[in-house]
Image (cartoon, rainbow, N blue to C red; front, side, top):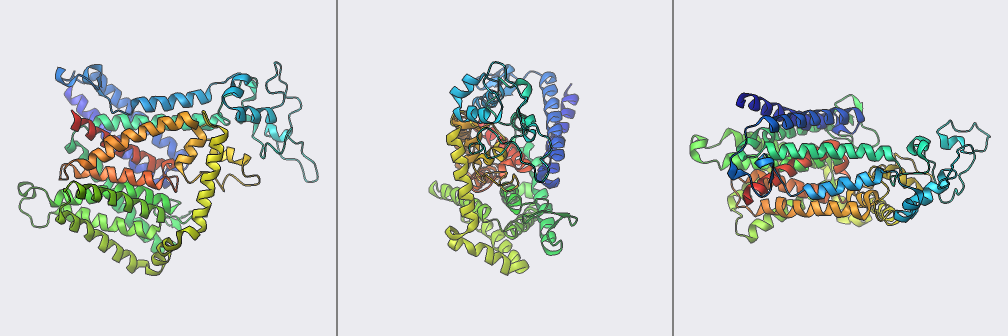
Length: 516
């Protein structure tokens, strides 16, 4: 039995590392095939964890108590209730409801259905008069005049018929595009499965070394690839694929998303450097320059250089703010050692020097725009996107328009635009409010409060040292990406959201161990 359980542990470790590694290498898993493979691996890992849960020996009675289930086999993180509430919100968005109830909960949704679906709300709806373009048929030939919806001013864009599942026309869900919400629900459930497995698997600090070391080394590889591509690939990802209209970096089509992934991984590299440098002499074998510290220090310098070359101003500001918060917290509590501060500044200085040597003009010009950030078109555009998302949230206040529907619902607020122009609101919080309403935001803010108080701040308040630096680094990375989400949509990039959830699991596990 113990041998079988040990084998399952190895399979779980390999599966988690494979999912985190594959998704980032596969262009950040922004394409459907990569997301599907990533989710398949996650569910296989979850199945292995369930088998281990069934076959593992019963833990000692002292481990079973408050905050545990199944006799101590399952431990609660504190995020279960808000996660359950959020899933219930998504299920409510997908349940077909009678027209009167739809109108009572979301008048704007009922209005859209009434102006888009012929005879919506009647006892015997008919679709005989439905225009061809609303049935998903070909557009009219040149010179022909297409039939218009009943109220073209209220509905700026037509929705393909398959989104509405017209066979159940009299009862409609609150989600305007149920297929997108179902897809988003599956993604959310897979992320929850990853969290549960990581939370229970890495229950000791020494057991977390394998995934942390792997992620740190992966960050070094991505940084090296990104820098080489920056110098030689002329915008091609992996030297063969055009990144599109965005400035790509490494395996990512958008350099901002490369920066988002690095925000999570680079603090881990710095923490591993400090851990190996300050390791007690018996473990270091009296070596003046431990090899681990040199290796992880090199990865930190290389990663910070690539991070600077990616020229993500939002990412740089977010990571700087998160690090400043951590240092301030340490200073206030008298736990900031000057040796740690010096060792932390050396990689930053070396990285800035390397990035300046590679492309001083480009880096200086890009970051120099922060001096007049209020005049930047990029910022004004993002503010406009956020305002649009908040306008949608005001029109769908209770349960939103449906998770995953923003790319389509924004048509109603921006006539004439294409889905490529605004697939995301560039503000994860505003978009979540638009898609899930007050109830969804309440669940998200509840989870966020638990994560920040128990995980991030709780981790930073622990005395810094070799046994806690990785937890503090995870907290800095999570806080940085949460700040960056006010200006971008990294949490909707599959590889970045997976790594974010994984680090959240490590944070919450450490918080649970510290409180026990």
